[in-house]
Length: 76
Image (cartoon, rainbow, N blue to C red; front, side):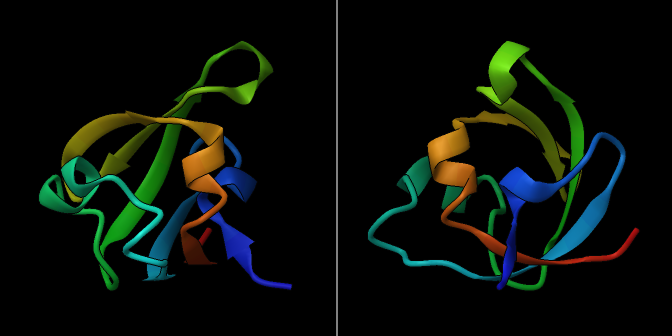
């Protein structure tokens, strides 16, 4: 089973492996949510939606539903 951004715990980092371009909003792609980039979970809201992440220096809030679509390789 592959891991996704939604599986990260606070402070954990990972490398984005893949996702379906049709399911990811264009704005996330423009902000650096691309394969090979590093992502870190900074904080999560109550009920883990949305998730506050740092992707290559850009701080983004993404919905848990979207985070489950982005496969990663966990680093720490």
